[in-house]
Image (tube, one colour):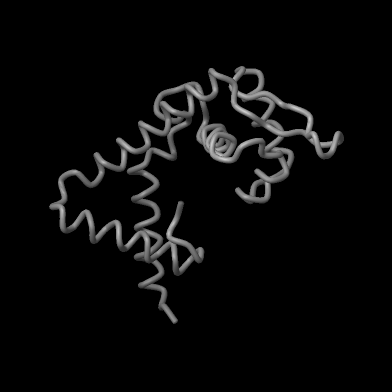
Length: 146
């Protein structure tokens, strides 16, 4: 069992990583999207025809908050709602062309951000960092990521 000092080291890493990623900034990569909007846009981009409830369950966020974010993305013409062919009471969310463009830009900038974070490390330490992240994902979430 970890003691408080060890737990505080993990918490310090979390705080530093959040700062390094810019998560505390109001907008993602100086766009007009908030971080939650960007994250939901990513879910819609990566899973064809996802439902709002699937987003709620996957991201573990409040249903009402998710609904408001989806409405904002729809107003910005980044997503559209389409009827579910299997269940007319349900809707699926898909990206518009504008939404796909926004997602691709955020995805590229996210990759660049990580590259910038580790670029000064020697190749061997970049691999060590990557392997550590894979290991942490496996331990905490049962997978190595995507």
